[in-house]
Image (tube, rainbow, N blue to C red; front, top):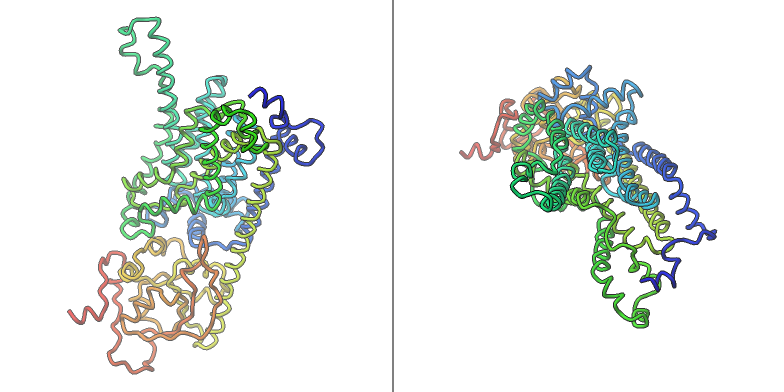
Length: 621
């Protein structure tokens, strides 16, 4: 090993006389990490606000907006108790305040999420900075920003806040767990952890998972403390004197008390949680399943998951072959080992620069979807990849640590890694921006097609949009002349029968009298009072099937909406919308039917109606 150091010093430090770009860049980043992070923050804000300008508000964000527009915390709480959204109140309060400070526009709605995500990036940076040089810490941050979770950084929901507060809690715990820090610093870390965990629970109930990384890490640290203290004490005193005190030796009761205090908000939110489970779980779109565990990795970590797994594999190979490689004679080794690879194998240390108890917490982050599956299976019955997005921190930390472990002795490795990460991040988000631009164009293509169809209908004909993903976005962005005529119909048994879930309809139905101006009616109410009307929906929509089952005739306009890109990561519609015409019971009969239509009954369309029986089956009975 010493011979390798003497022969190849360039693997262990860059020449101070090097004038090339890579040497200068790495040196500047390492000398001025604070400035570099400030540049990263500016780049993050520019990308987030740029992508936000392309992205239309979608259903979930519009639900947040309508709740945040209420007059204050009391009315927001009342809306949540009625089931308007299955989340705690803090996100809506933050958006409410942001609207008051910055005005009623899309950027204001998304500022809390942008700030929440930045908290996560800052916490990740300062955590990595404790173990790595500035360039490798920035590399880890950019890796985390190159994952699918970044799409939630500019979405007006709770997920970016959940994301940032989870990392903040873990970072604060590591500050407190470090015995080398001053007492005031450790107390500050403990208070920060408690505040971050409590705030996380107040933004999203799945923030209970954020307790696991610091809790598992603290458990491992406690075991290590007890082992060390027991080993020292056994040489000094008799075993009998340790009995009764060993169980407390090494346990930091302040941390566990902090966990209990941070979990206290759950007591206040218990009625909301119980109501949400009863309302949404029976026909939830995101019923818990093992498939969602795998989807969480592929959708949140995204494509960069596979290069990171490759880096992990390379790290394992190097770790287990390092001693054997250098046990081979030098001439034999040079015959099969490239010169640059000697820098990878020539580590000054054989272990990663992270304490065992912190590594345990990072491992929990890596297993976040599995933990989410276990928790959701025990209580709640609902799980989605977005609920476990802090998994990205586990992969970002591990990727930075393992990549540094492999390449820190290779000249210019940090600069090359930074360039690759930056290129990946920018290319990915350029593609995302293009997708959002296409999605926005598709939405306005639907508006244009609807205006052409509307010209062939009686004046002021109702516009029925039975797709909840499209309904609120249409009402928010469509011209007033169209939005004022929108109707959102529901027939809960039919929705459950044809689509197998009713979560978004439950949201809108619960807030129909308090939040939304668009009429939300049962099909029985609407159909009995309607004349001719338009339907904007995918040809496979539940309403068309329901109308057909009730023997109502409808026809499709020969209009290509050219809206195939209206779906996507946060879809604005289910499938490609088409435009149909039909008529309600008030319209004069213009078509001869073999059998008259079977009228809808409003009482059979409400959420309480448990079973859907198509009229033809009812007649057979």
